Amino acid sequence: MKFFLTFLLVLFSVCINAQDLEKLSKEVTEEGIALYRSEMASWYGTDVVKENYKNMENIGGYFSYLDDVPKCIFFSKQNKVVATISFPTNYNPANAKVDLSERDFTHVEMDYFTIRQKALTRISNDTIFNRYDNTNFNLVPIIKKNSKKVYVLTGASVNNVVIFGNDYLLTFNNKNEVENVEKLHKGIIVHNIGDSGKGADASGVHSHVLDNWQQITPTDICTLMLYQELTGWETYTTISKKYASIWNNKSNRAFIMKTENFKKITNYQLEKNKKAENKNTQDSNK
Image (cartoon, rainbow, N blue to C red):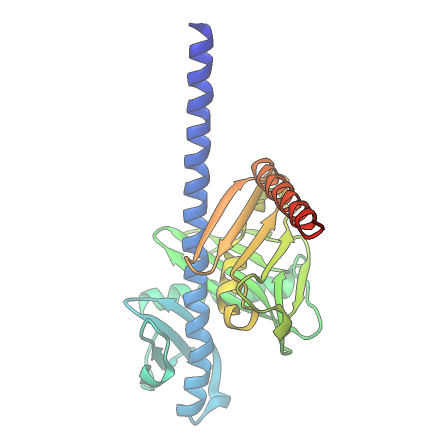
C-alpha cells in the first residue's frame, strides 16, 4: 500500500510538471508571436510611410500595436499622430490602409506612447543597457489586460547577421511607471548567415544562463520568425541548466522540456545513429 501511494505521488508530480511545461510553452509562444506581429507592422509600416508621407523630418517616432488589425502609428515632434498604417494579416504593404490625417492619440495609443517614451528615457539613464557597433535598439510595447511591458531587442544594421540577446524587458504598473528592468540574456549572440546555412535540416542553438530566463524567450521567438526567410532554420534550440526549448518553424510553436530529459533523448539518438553507421560500414566491407 505504501509503495502504491508513493507511485501515485510520483505519477501526479510528473503530470503536474508536464502541465506546467505545456503552460509555459504556450505562454512564451503567444508572447513571442505578439512581438513578431508588432515588429512586422513596424518593419513594413516604415516603408509605407516613407512612400506616402512627404514631411519625414516632422516624424518624432513610431510604435505598433495589435488592435482589430496590426497598426503602426507615426507621431510628430509635437506628439500628434500624423500617420496610421493598418495591415491585413499577411502584412502585404500593397494592401495596407494609409491614413495621413493628423489627430490626437486614442486612450489606448496614449498608454503605448507613454510606456515607450519612458522606456527610452530609462535606456538613456540606466547602465544595464549595453550598445554594440552595427546594432540598434528596437522597442516593442505590449499591453495585455493589466500587463504593460516594453521589450527591447537588439537588431543588426548590417546584412546577413541575426542577433539574439542583448535584450531587455521593462515592466510597468497601472500608472505607467517602471516597476522592473531585467536582461533576458546575459550577453549578445551573433549568427552570421550565408546560403550554406539554409535547408530543411538547418538549425541553430544558443545557451541561457540567467536564472529568470531558463526557457526560450519571447524575443528569441520574435527574432526566429522575423528572419526565417533568411536563415532557413526549421528548428532552433536554447539550452539551460533547467530547460531545453525547441522552436519549430512549421508549427510556430515552442516545446519546452527538462534538460535532463533532452540529454537522454539526444544521447539515445546519437547511440542509435552510431550503431546504424557501424552496421553500414560492416555491410560495405562484406
